Length: 516
Image (cartoon, rainbow, N blue to C red):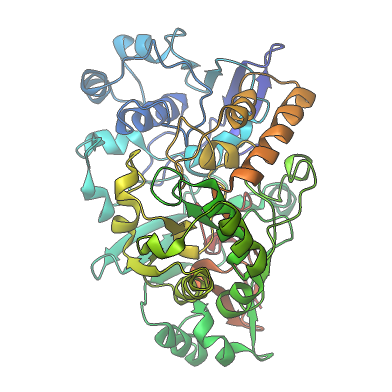
């Protein structure tokens, strides 16, 4: 749906998208929203990624070889400003030899290196959340790829939304917000909001969001009426399992999945038979019951079930728990697990459901004579091993996002292929295969759906047999960090969540919360 863009057009060859932007929008500090702001945001992302080909979540849709955006470019923008740019700055931003360029203050062009028919899906979530780059330039700039400007953690950059951040405190443990009286969509009619409800001006004048680490304390705050909504972990679901409370149920097409990555470059998970045996040694029902309250639905990856046309090509059966078959696979391959080192399995801290899932897997693999050491890590520790192709730093096993669930980076059917099995990006398993790569490449090499489906059907079978991942399940209901959003029945009437069902937001969209 149109948002900050009124509309867009696509060239006949499918490679050029021209977005016409709204011209009556301002950021919360009064700075104008325009094409120059969006242009600078995109190239700022590119710069902060160290000019990586993966700067847009691994989507290789642009040829960036002619782009030279760095400190000198940023200095030029800083001198010029983005509200009424100088001629020199305009010349840079209107340079059509670069893949993203402005033709005027309210028109932005994206020139793709080849057709990608889902391109509009790349311009929502993180890439589409526009912020005031003019403010950034006036307050120290982006920083550098290795040292982002941390000042914005305490002084958030203005956005175009209906609320203004008025304070960040307690070591960033709480955020206060108030309604923006000058919000550009403040006077929209009910009919307009019905088309794009995410632009609702909000139903509370002031909002406080607290980070409360202890789950029981969150429940106490909710039950006492101190807060209207809280994330309640699995361990305390018995407290809210009554008609007094409601919780969020995800739609059946949600892309939130749980999987176990197997390090295909490190011993002994570099042995296909070992990975195949592991896929049959895990009791998926047990994980569902003990870690996700029975709300895990089996699936066949890497595609999210969201994209039915591309999901489970070849109609393969999800991996089945069969310890006898697992043992036979190892025996037939002449593999003696008593000679294996102890496996390391990482999961994220602060998630009881994640730990429960890891403990089930630990017990299951013990039946094969495989010892597993669970390493509960902070996010910074967990992700260190995923910024490089470095199998010696990676564990044999890693629960995706700590078993908390992985949702799409961007809402396109190519997302899972780019994220999990693409040799051009860092994926959990470090997995790549020529047959699979043909499918991955086809998404951005052709607009021929039949060709893409044929290549990806062959890739699906290859992945299924190679087992770089054990696809544990799809989450129902939505369980962020092993819990769910809970509120008192009658207090909250309704709200929206991230309409793209990606990992960008795991809470309610606050301006859409209505009260009963």
